Image (cartoon, rainbow, N blue to C red; front, side):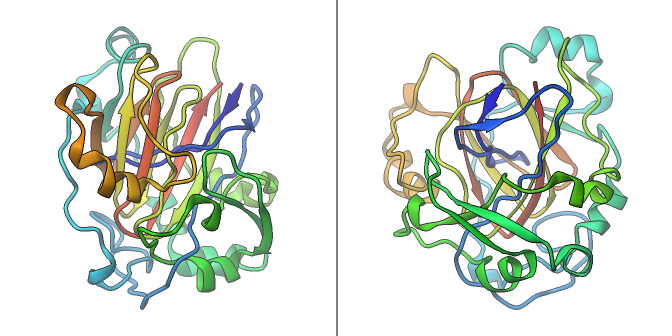
Length: 294
């Protein structure tokens, strides 16, 4: 299955982004960390739960994009939905946000800024441009990415000028970390999960794209998602960022062209069905992980 990177939602916790040409075979697992090149602020080793600040990833308050926005996606407690009900109501027809499906407290602690730098700072990672089709690749150490390139995004920055920590990385080097992650338990028949891990600054995200079904969970921060069904392609420029779309296009959409949307936070998992268009926007510095079903 070919897939694109997923980004994040609005209103309630969710996450996804867009990028075409990422291959995931059955049983395969890929490491994907998404992060934009912009400006880093002071680190705050805040607590682990709740909203954006935790894990040492928080930037000064003025770098946050503020309110979550509206939420037009169902939000359910994991205990309210059986696997069979998930398959019947959502798996093939519409997105849903689920809370309390798994306990990833340990994984969250391991994803703090200090822990990741200590354990993986010397590893080389490959960054890709964050436009609809990613062309340019840049190799840097994970430490350089976090300390020098992980910054807030400006509205004027083009996707081709934004570097994401995404794909093309050696998954086995991060295996110990992903072994501690508990993915959502609801699989689709005949599929297995492949992970994509991301870290991104405020204002970053991936423009509209589609790929196969999957889940997105926020570990730290807030991620806003915008989604359209497969037969309703959104209007967007492939080299403009989600932030510019939100400022320039979103406010003027007629009601019939409005997306489904929501913002997800730690402890919330967004499920997106096959071929659904989606764009993401990180409202704060965010750490997130997606499970692609293929």
